[in-house]
Length: 243
Image 1 (cartoon, rainbow, N blue to C red):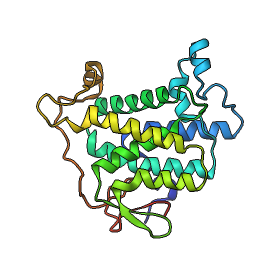
Image 2: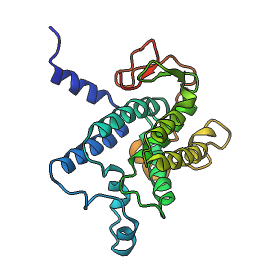
Image 3: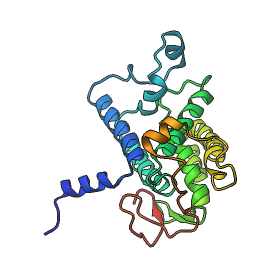
Image 4: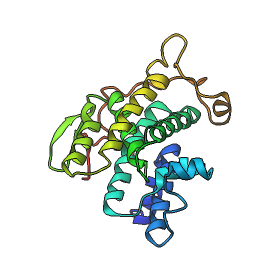
């Protein structure tokens, strides 16, 4: 007898790697809260409030200041799919490294928007994750809604092109995320297997509490068969976005 849909959802949720699970839970939870009546004011990103009123929490909550909508659901779904696979590949049993990696991306995106009036920085975080994923899985096939297939190396650029065609203002955050993702990837991941290790090392407190650089480096996912990021099983046709 097959499990109920609720049990299947719970199983899928538990299979999401821990860092991605926390980020998606915050995004969905706050997005739902904003939808049902809890205002955006306590969470949205605003440098004036951060600096002048010392509301430092906005440096974090500003990445989750969205409202539940169809667009947001698709965005959360894509983020879960690709962030899960990236976390399993790079930070399996190395949660300290993963927390440091995501934290650097958030800091970089926030600083890059100092003169830009963005209230929700999640698209920048997502773009950075997609960029690093594309560097780890450049030959893995990705399939879009209409059956268009392309190598994983083009993933962040395809998303950026879609937002350009939709005249979506988050295209600036897409570009910022790609740039930030490039530098964070170079500083923390690209040189990890070289003598001396990563150029920017995870703080010792994160390594002690969550695990990190002292653990073996996971095998790179370059050229691996496509997988279902939610369950880790072969899809056979690469990642199908929205399908």
